[in-house]
Length: 201
Length: 287
Image (cartoon, rainbow over all chains, first blue to last red; front, side, top):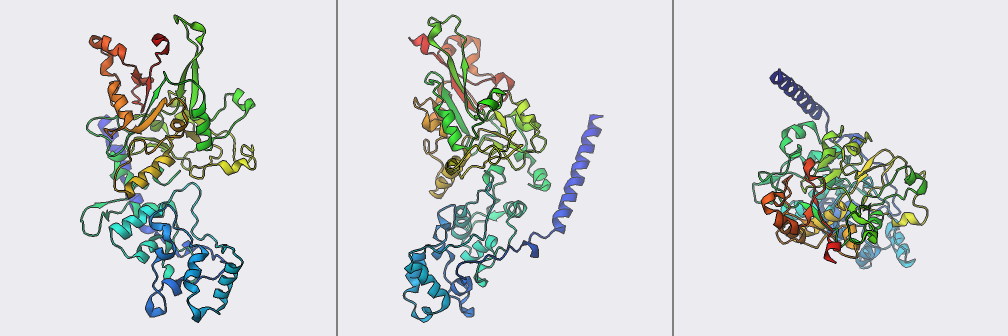
């Protein structure tokens, strides 16, 4: 009797698990609808010009040159105006273009540029940039733009950044469930933590 | 967590009694509270309110039996046989015991309360549907239910008091259960910092809010796996073992020895395997 019960429970489990496999296969993780809203920034910052490929007229600047905190803090950080001016006061060729003029207006008024948030997670979620950058860029030696692009999309082709990934829990978990090598050379793999309190607070 | 992951890694997720076969890997957070040092000043409770965004429910609701103190001071007035019976109450700070085999976890219909790899009893507010079954099953009555939507309707944190809310902790809405988290937001930061430095969390590097404010240092908190941790040493000296529901010191032939030991865990016989050890009060006998 009990043996029979146990078998039927197992059967239900198998059917459910097969069903969930099917559901997973049917739904692509990223769809066109995942594209976030267009965010109007005070200055139309050209990411493509700064970080884009040299062949397309980009400067190929490392993401972490401006977003310095990504490797050592929970947040990646928006660069202070000093950082922009630090380079741009020496770049005479673009000094009179409208965007740079606007930049220097802020500088002369001694005001910070009121950048708007593009990748905004709910308040109950804790996402740590440091852990991800240390793992992918420093341990696994992935190119910086690729590693940042896992969540931020191909920012080097955009002007103002726009959300391209869903940033939903299922999407996060889909990567946490995958086995990733622990460093660039080792064959040993681990997956991301799957404990709720790792991300939920 | 998809069901495939749940089924494939069932051994990681299922509730198990602690055993030598399945030891904790890096961390097992535990606490010990010295009741002899505790003066019942309630500073721990106040610190918890500030750290964890707990709403002050007010006199009227408290009179109806509603409260939100994740750590509360229980008073016992049993003074029979004491030399100085008018000396006052005996105090016991009661918080979630983070049981290794927690009765609350097994009854949650939606799996909102789980055991983490660090030996914490986690409560996930987003998943909680407010059945309150866990509260009913908790022998320590350490879980608190949000009957009201404090952040909005009741104006618990009027301007500018909302500025003191801790951004690392969710402000819970109506209809979810909440309880002591062992200040998991602090543990996460400490673990991340330690990992960047390529080591484990050192003893004393992370403190819970209640431990930090305790004026008499009655509360110690740390990693039981770490052999250098104060809390582990206390557990060992008191001969209290995490994975036993009956401690060796309680056996009759070592009765004399046991009389000198004052470590115990509350309602241990229920086989909840709590992570909080109390040190019995002996102040009066020491006088």
